[in-house]
Image (cartoon, rainbow, N blue to C red):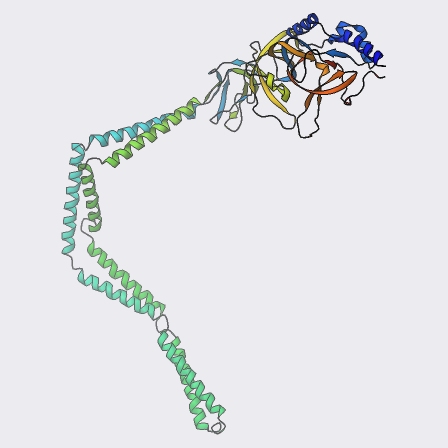
Length: 527
């Protein structure tokens, strides 16, 4: 049996072992576009394919040779983000300078909004700025001679008017009028007080009435005096008198007519007093004094130089006015929308004549170059570097090749898939690529000279005993007709062969088409 097995192994080894020339030919194929290709065994011997299909184990050896590393992926072409063009002001859309699909450069005009109102705001802001600057200049220059002369003349006139009115008032007989007003106010207070009962009198009358009722009740309760008619009549008379007195105390002595008459007398007295205080020129003395105070303040203000606080406040006003003018000019400039990036117009949401504003995008730009984002396996991270070249094959452009560069590698691993995102930038100067196209991607990871390698089909990804650990790369070696599981570390691959960096030596026999259900030490070819 072992002789038959050795013969079978020798034939299989003879069929599937790669010579150096075949290995060189295999490695050189990495320079071609990544299209499905027959395996080495199929290309070497058609009979081997039949043997494989019938379940025959294929045995080969780990060989050493040069390997051009290539990682292959399939992914969709994407844009490198998009830029929404949102107006900063609300206005009518007057003109669109681009169409759907237009290519624009940075600073190109995209659209123009109505700016007539914005221009008026600019003029108003500039006028306010000029006024603030003129006020600041006047404060720094100090008081003018003509301003001082006018303030002094105004003060002299106000002072003369006060003296004239004061003299006229001093000559008027106001003492009697003042006394009349005082007496009229006293009479009004008395008339108003008479409209209400005297609280003290009411309290005293209520106490007298209560005492009379108590006396009558005591007589009625005393059986010895209940028949004393004289005493009972006297007590009832006292109660009646006390009730009458209480009613009188509760009744006001004054009348509303008396109050009205007192109010009229007070108004007449006050009117006479007021007429006496008025001058013959119809200027009130108090008003003249107030005007004199204003004239005095204006004169002092004209004579005093501007304080540091006033100049500082004026300078702040100038700065505020300048800021408002700059803001108005910026809003006017915002009426012309320009391209913030070089790109392509992929969407226009508004029409000429419609009202647009900050609440919605007017159009959308995308950068001219595309990108592809692939999910690389954890085991491939060691082969990936920023700056590596990549080749893309697009079905829609089967005869054209696109090149790209690894731009970024995500710093974290997806714990669920054990993969990491890799971004490849793809220049597209002719604008042929469209978002959503599927691309076959090959990233060149570099040449490995004199590397120990095995066919890709000889490598299995298997779970370890520890369910929390990462998947392991496994080959099954053959020794004395039995298979043995061997965990290996892998390096670069060209899509057909895989570099073994740990766990396997050159020349070791291994199963080229292993099964994941192999048992450790299982005999192969026993069937």
